[in-house]
Image (cartoon, rainbow, N blue to C red; front, side):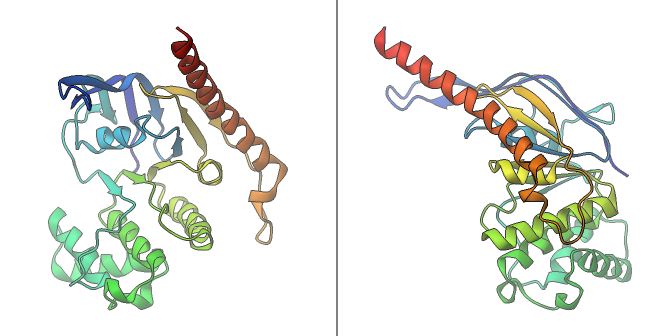
Length: 274
């Protein structure tokens, strides 16, 4: 079952030490951020470095709480991590002494509610879902980078969370592997109906994956715009990334991000003149 996520007027302030005088100062990561992610939606978030993209995932996951505002899942305020929300990071975080199957079974053990036979059956089911049914007995060092990330995705899906949070999970992969996993992730999302929130700095990845793309401003992070993505119905032998619609969406998002960079650079120049 998928979940609806809401961020209402969210602000996040960290206390950090100034590099020059070493005094503690407020670092405003997010300010007045408003975002609603519908149940079953695939939303990608893109923005400049340091704008607070990963902070949003930390708040939805419950790893941190906002300084102001509220983060809700199906109308309930999120205060702590829970099995209804799962996170896939850029690093695979697999236990090297456990097989692919064993890594997934461990997650199911932590959640509880299933006996050993049921855990094994569920682990094999999600391995099949990500195309690794024949690699259940392999250890992480015997798997490629793309395979390790598939295991990490399978592990996150194994206990059927309502929300799957993904923080640049394909960033360390080569281009061909990344594109293949993007295609497979879309198929997995369609098969499961899980709400997915996907952080990326790659505009093309954001357009290819997302039903909508949330474009963030420079810090302090806010949602500058939401872009609805319509790529039409692609055929099996069509490269949707080379289509006119894809290029139009990519340019729209690039322009939104570029505006922020231009404004920031102008601000710096004005400061220097002053």
